[in-house]
Length: 610
Ligand SMILES: [Zn+2]
Image (tube, rainbow, N blue to C red):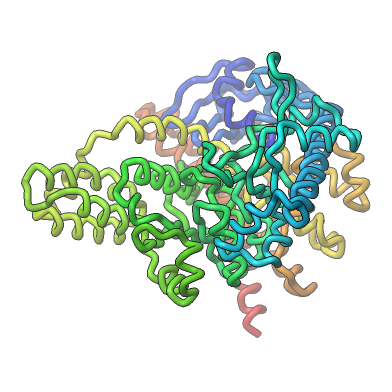
């Protein structure tokens, strides 16, 4: 999350504006005399749901919390950012500090790379590594895989790696920070990994972030990972993602298994969309990582773990990470389960690598037959409980109802309610009533508390798409001049647009921009857009411009309509009359513009058909 998003998420626009002027509650919004022009009746409104403000009086302007502070304090974006960051308790990281951290990370990657090379060479050449080589042979891992995954062997020594790295100019401190050696007062420095099969773990960009290590004797733990370091966070990495990402994108499916060896064997047999969850159940960070590539995830689960409380909880976490806040219009938001989370049933007692080696055909079949996660829940509960007993039927309903009532799609929800009704022998209407009356569980309540402020950071996807087009395609400059800074509600976006308009190219644009916006600029400049011809690009930008304009006009109209309704419900005839009159006068404007826009859209549609 960028600092700008973080600040927006932490602050409530109502609190911030209240620091400057006195707001008065008015239905779902707050009103005040406009601080930017002189007036007798309030026409300045703050909308908490949208986290925006708008003056319906003579200024006719609006925006988010940043633009309010910029205008009110008469400062530039950078200064507004500092003011709001301090208020939100968000630390602004200076560019120097960021550079220092980048340098530190770079050094750790380098160090890990050197370590991997050392262990790899030992595995290939050393006599002591015979035990590791025969283990690989037993697991069916080919020479080619051994080399391309850069597998290695850590010798049975207290300080072989330490001495090797010191001799190459690495320092004791940085080896400790990389988690490769441990430092204790009583015995000095020791290698962390001894007599183990070493598996370098690469991040999405392909840099080695840490290591997984399997014991080759009966030492415990059987699997040992690098500790958390500046570059290694187990919960945010998927093993194999660097080489799987392309296949995942192309096939529109990510298969997540548990073990490193599973991934290596899968890739060896040509199943290149397989990654591993690092031995834990799937974390939200891992789901986010995958979601950037595809919204279809299939999890391979051991039959022994079916119905396991821990497994089910893990699936709930994954399911939640799959749920996204969607904003259908400017009023409020709804959450919706996006994508497909499915479960691959493994035969009892078998890991994916065994299944694949025995019969790639069978693996393909298991993947095809993966069950939607809700079916899996149904099955798991049925498996665990004896549904011929009344009490256990009630327990089944209790476990499944909360999960079913969270399904956003009503048709799908009905379907599962029906199946649950059949399963527990209760009329589905009774269940539906129960689901509706059900008190939210603690988990759901805490989830709500978390998801409410996040509705604030839905962002402005259309604005950002539009800017990406402009930044990546200089040939669109003429068409882009048709946009107005007013179309951008996110101040970070309107700032970028203004800077773009004033600069001949993206490099000089950066020079004209507050440094706090560089990160946002970079994300838009490097964002992947589908390949398109010049003609298609022009159409895309024109569409985007029209939609932004329409969005703004519709929003203003909807706000005005809401204000009229609220005035009506307040019951003060004079207020209503006054407000309706001013609003009607102004409302004509967006209405006319909307009509123009509609005609323009019609023309564009017809043009596209010819
Ligand atoms: Zn005003």
